[in-house]
Image 1 (cartoon, rainbow, N blue to C red):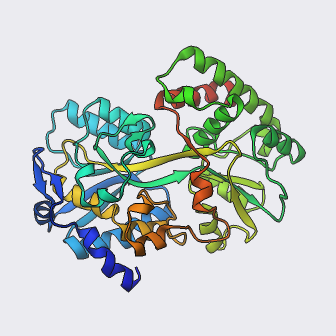
Image 2 (cartoon, rainbow, N blue to C red; image 1 turned 90 degrees about the vertical axis):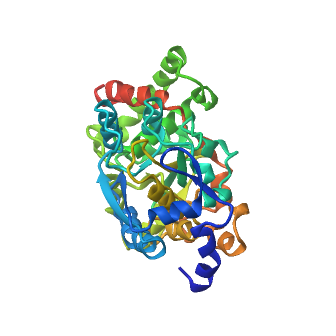
Image 3 (cartoon, helix red, strand yellow; image 1 turned 60 degrees about the vertical axis):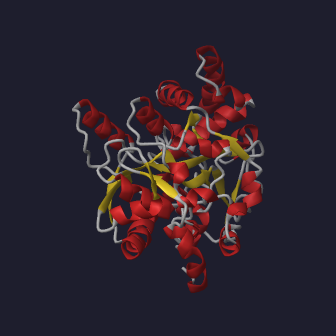
Length: 404
């Protein structure tokens, strides 16, 4: 962090007079007492471990800062799937284990909803954190997680938005809607692919096509309706099956992950890529992995966006420490470091207009020729469908596209 900025932001990262938190037994407590209780303790965070840049951000930046500021030791437990942590918590609850092993979970969407329905989450606490004052809790993309009410049970950590990636040296006019994509793939057979669901980015692409072929988003914000789903999904699967013969390897196989798709783009096997991180392209350019001519864009009807969070299990052994860690993750200084395209490149969960001047300037615009202006992203945000729609869409893709 820049020295001048660090001095300005230290107070907001540490909390202040009059701010509060929630004790282990649910009572309201001054945040300073939670900080005192957390000193010298260990906080275990369970989180997806498949991205080196994210792991480096936590290990090389967050851990040392927590040690320095709060004398907290952060232990990162890597997961291949966040559902593994939720299943562990479900097992612990079934066994009546009142003191678990997980203090904090990186989570959103279906996994949060599953845990909420099972009463796995501690709360409400997130809106009481000192740095919660920088969050716009009236924004439904914050207060509702894939349509499910957050109700203070998880603290927003960052935001993502679906973007398309292309090599401007090979693609003059990238396809900006479903019809153009189908035509482009037909004109450039083998140069397009998308990851196979249940990969997160693959799921997002299929959902994006659902929105594109139906021209609607609102029905999918409502509780699941089978008749509406059958009609909408049938159009989507028909479209994807029409696209399939012109995909990489003629659609006989799909990239198993977004990382594999990135490799295909990096090697020039495909000319279009996609990501839920709007700064991925610039990050890969900076590393020398993507061509300098790489650029990003959004579909003309908008692209999916969502917020990711951290939640505290109801049987977390160190709830005080977990809240202190969550508060630091929300601090302007930690959010600035997280948005650096040379590292993770994740967009901030904070409301820019609520920030101190120095932080506002640092977070106002992502840097790099391959990144889109913040206004372009904000003006083209589409809400995620509720989890039930997505689960049914994923299962249907397996049966109606992959096996077709």
